[in-house]
Length: 139
Image 1 (cartoon, rainbow, N blue to C red):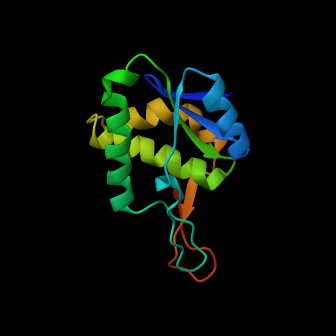
Image 2: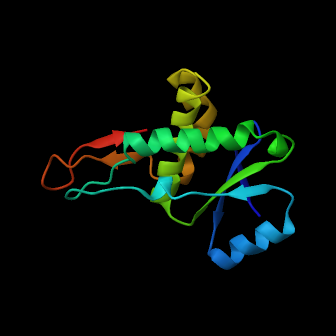
C-alpha cells in the first residue's frame, strides 16, 4: 500500500477499488478508514468547490476521535480515498481544516505542513459566479 505522509501518524492512501481496500485491511497492521465527507460537493453551475462548512466540522470530529482513541495510539491511521483528484483536493482541505480547528495550528503552519501534497491534486476550486468557469481559488 502506498501511504502518503500527512502529519504525525496520519496518512492518506489512494486505492483503485473496493477489492484493493479490502486486501489492505486484511494484510496490514495500519488502521485503514474512510468516510464520505470528502465526496460532498454540490455544484451550482460550472463550479467545483470545496465541501461545505458543516462537513468540515463533522470530518474534524471524526478524525479527532480516531487520533484520540487510545487503542489506535501506536498505529498508523490511513485515510483512504479512491483515485480521484477532486476527492484528494477535498481530503487535503479537510485535514488542513482539522489541523486549524482541533489542533489550533495557524494557517501558515498548515500550508507548510501540507505543501508536500500540493503536486498530487487540483490545487484550486472554481467559483460558480461567472457563467463560464468563474474565479479560480487556490489552496
